[in-house]
Length: 461
Image (cartoon, rainbow, N blue to C red; front, side, top):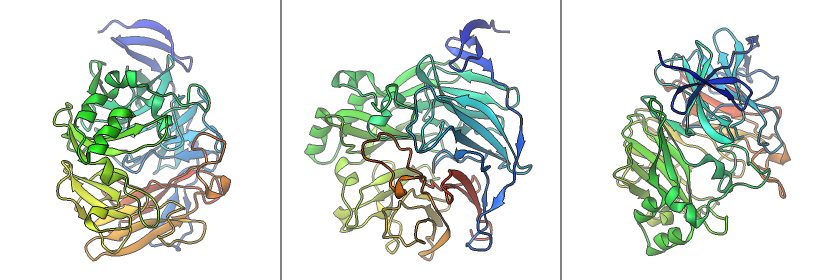
């Protein structure tokens, strides 16, 4: 038996012990289960039956459009419950990580965390081997770190590094520096340490920052790929490389493919703390074979109706990436649903007829594409004041609307308010497939309160 050394208190005041170098463990103690009623959402009105699967006692969110919030058995749903909305998150405020039993209609708080945001919540993610473990982020000793919540024993392990994504074998977590993410996109990491003033990098930080990886067995956190390594692999026009050399670089979206063979990484450059100027890289899971698969020039084309490239996501085959692009180099003026290989080859348009929008993802056999929209993307028709959840049959190029949902949580549908920092008025549906591609989970607020919904597509796909 390993010696357990008491090392004091966590940020939530829980007594912690040392399991291994740097790995803290403590007992949280799940709170009492509460019963609630899963409600039908506009029964009989839509293409598929839809249920509101969160209680009406607070503000709830699932994680993201590429993180399934349903447990491997599909009995449980993991969500973040916010302490408030319409208010920028404060450093030190706690959100709840909750598990909903869809069969028995109960909810319980399994952890409280200071590491949360309005777009990803606490970045809650199920382990891949069963319904026992949840992974999320917290702030401990003033630092964002990953925690693993054991739903059987109530033990919580806190690691040395933060999590943006968990490897499919549950052995590693990867993440950019979460303390600086708000400077280039609010809502995907943790609150600002100084309220309303995101932390930033300097040029001197570039060799010391990049993509971090933590081994969950040894708790060793290493810099897997540093910023200068990305810059050295920039392709496209010479202006692109020159831009990234003179800009301060940041990383955004870091994702493993399901086959655990590749990592996808969004790379950005800011000048005077402004801009994004994104491009896309892939690499092997050990950081090798780093390749820019979509250049800054190709990512940042502007569409005729507005908007630029956005939301890359792994195809389930682990070889291709799905993304909204404006491929004007191929003669297109509008945002299109696009697909290309991890090395940038085999670029194609998935649908000539249906314009791109929102957060696109595709099922395993490439027969159906799922997406939502933003309120400003008015080239996609929807009921007034609502957002459509889109389902496009790629076999016959036919689109249907699964349902529509309101997402206005204040500020008259506008995601940001002048003079305020944060994304507290922003609510994206982020529709995400279940693991068997028969259900879809998404966010909504038809009554102004953030809730989570589930649509059953088993009769359609």
